[in-house]
Length: 122
Image (cartoon, rainbow, N blue to C red; front, side):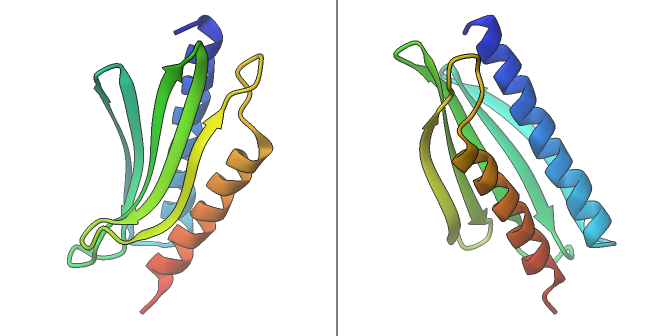
């Protein structure tokens, strides 16, 4: 990974931590956390949330890897208990300078809203 890739990865971590903070603010009593796992050179970042201890989690997960010298990110919003995919974005390639495409940033914003809406359901 290049220095720019590491900076982009740090930005993705910060963005998912922000999702966690916003979920906690928008849904008092909800549990939300961020975690990261590295496996076979691929970083898996996840913002996991649940409304109550008996509810299914809603997980926004990113897979970050380097392919052909470029940082590539895929994302899924999944219901933890059922595996239902609520949203998905395939391989967004970081632009020169490590910036992610606007469509990817918009996707993360939309998934944050979906998480909050789902956790607020009775």
